[in-house]
Length: 290
Ligand code: UTP
Image (cartoon, rainbow, N blue to C red; front, side, top):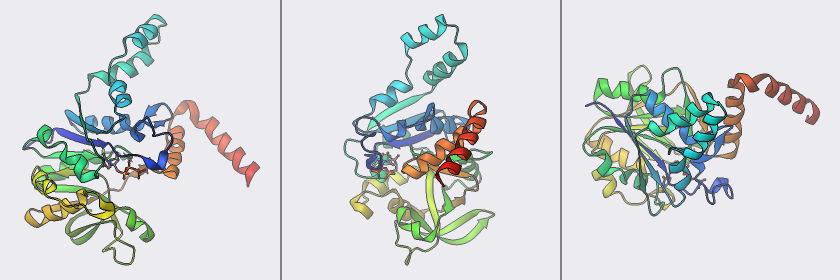
């Protein structure tokens, strides 16, 4: 079955970015001129996804508004002949987006469960709203390719420093099924470095079969007293194969302050109109301060 639908959980409290995230979801934090979530929506579309459900919390308005038409702004840009800018905002409201509230932030597993009726009986992808991935083939497309070949759930993983395993879900790889794709013995949420089965961490892209929903419905709270997606995936792996695919591109974790800074600098360097000035600024600042 073709993978057509994506779920973007964006209902977390974003406490690491308070007070910026008091009235605005952290997924709207701008990377210079583009909100984080727009990069994710673009990755979904480039991967062939047709319908996207965004799971939101109390402060969902800015996300809905961002992907809606804005007559007033469009008229002003039109009148001023700013066609290029007009296209950048008009393109946004042609996307098939749906919204569902997660009334209580009970964890990522609980956020994904909100998509049960939207997904129905199809395979789908989960794309975390604060994790940006850059590669020649979009990571979501890489997961879909593996699904098309195996018809199995596939999660993206990446090596992380040992001391960081307690921030992630971590896999216990069993054997390499093919280059860069592993069969997995266990999926463990936030293991301490001493007991982590590997340093291969689950990053923010998952391709899941719909059987995950029955498991999420009965999933008790785990690490941090939250309903953990990783725990339900570990159970799914006991009834059907779940693969881990190693990502070789660049990952930007916008959800923490340092990751956010890195993302902005990298993106700035990729923009021709900023690149040279930014390099000069960084060089001069480093020389002056260090
Ligand atoms: P995080 O743990 O990084 O997000 O969840 P958070 O809880 O908002 O962040 P901090 O730690 O308080 O700063 C990863 C993703 O899952 C979503 C978040 O919005 C984020 O995109 N999420 C998390 C939900 O949608 N619902 C939840 O209950 C928890």
